[in-house]
Length: 478
Image 1 (tube, one colour):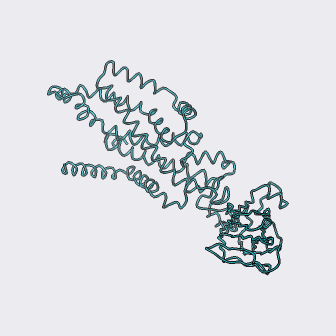
Image 2 (spheres, rainbow, N blue to C red):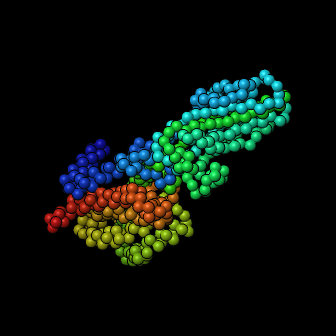
Image 3 (cartoon, rainbow, N blue to C red):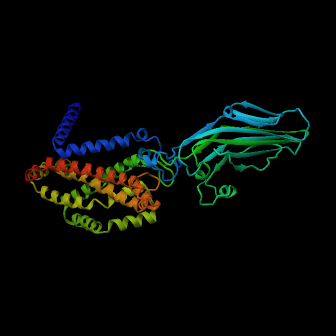
C-alpha cells in the first residue's frame, strides 16, 4: 500500500514539474497560488469583516488619497473613550459629591444643606481636531439614574459641544428623570444625522452638522451638565460610564468604504473565497455529471444512449441566463443553490465529448479482450475506459472554472446572487446601485473586475499548459 502511495506521489510530482516547464503553466500557477493565499489568509490580510458597517463615513476615499495635496487634510477616523477619571469639573455646586466606583463616575448630593435644593455639575473634556471639516459625529453616553426616598427628586442631563470660537451647541436636553427606583437606560446616543437634532440646532435637514460645528482646526470641548433636584427625604444618584466620542473619517483603508461605511478592501479579499468556491465546486460537479452521462451513453448505446442524449440536447439548447434568473427569483438566493444551478446547466458539452470518445473506445481490442475473460461493464468502464479519458477530464475540469466564476459574478451583478456573501459581482452590483459609476469611483469598480479577470486567466493559462502536455502536436503547431 505504501509502495502504491509512493508511486502516485512520484507521478504527481513528475506531472507538476512537467507543468512548470510550460511558461503558461508557471504563470497560471503563480497567479493561482496568490489567490489561494489570499483566500486562506483573508482574516489576516483584512483587519475587518466585509459585513461590518459604519467603519468610516459613507463613500470614504482610500487612505492613499492623502498623498495628494488637495486631499491631505481629509479627516481620518477620530475615536475617543472618555473614562471617569478623564473628566474635568468645570463648575459645581458645593453640595454635590463626585466619586469613581468600578470605572463609573458617581454623582450624588451630600446630606448637608437645606432641602429641597438643586445641585449641578459641569463635566468637560477637550477634543483636539486637526483635520478639515467632517460630515458628522456621534456620541454614546452610558448612564444609570437611581432615585430613592420621597417622590419629587429628579435628575436632568444636558450635552453641549463648544467650538474653537466659544460657540456652544446643545446636542441633548434630557427630560427630568424622576422615578422611585433605579433606572438603567441604554446608552444615550447622539448622531448628527438625526433630522430632529439638525432642526433643533437651527440647521437645514440637508446640512452636514459636522461641517457646521467642526469648521476649523483646533480644540473643541465636550461638556456634560448634570442637575440633581432633591426633596426633603429624597436622594438621586447619577452614574456615568465610559463616554464614546467618534468622528467618522472621510478616508479609510486601501479602497475606502461603500454606501454603508463597510470596508471595500475586506469585501475584495473575502470575495476571493467565494469565487474559488463557486468555480471549483461547480466545475467538479458539472464534470462529474458530464462524465457519468457521457460514459454510460457511449458505452451502452441503443435506447440508453438515445434517452440520455435527448436529455442532454434538451438542456443544451435551453437559455441558461434566463433560466437561472427565473429559478433565483422564484426559489431564492443562496450560494450553494447558485453553485448547483451553474453545475447542472454546464455539463452537456462535456457529456457529448465523452460519449464520442467512449464510442470509439468500446470496440477496441483491449476492451473486447477484457470482455472475453469475463470482465463486467463496471470494471471495464472504471479500469479501462475512464483512464483513457483522463486528459480531457483534467483539461475540462480546469477550463470550466472560469466560466463558473464569470457566471456567478454576472448573477451577483444582476442582484440574483446570495446577498449574504461577499463576492466580486456583489461589489459591482453595490457600486452600480450606489451610483459609484456616475461618481467615477474607479477604486470601487476596477479592483473586483481585475480580480475576476486574473483569477479566470490563471485557470485558462493552466488549462492551456495541460492541453499542450496531453496533446504535444498542439505545441508543435504553435
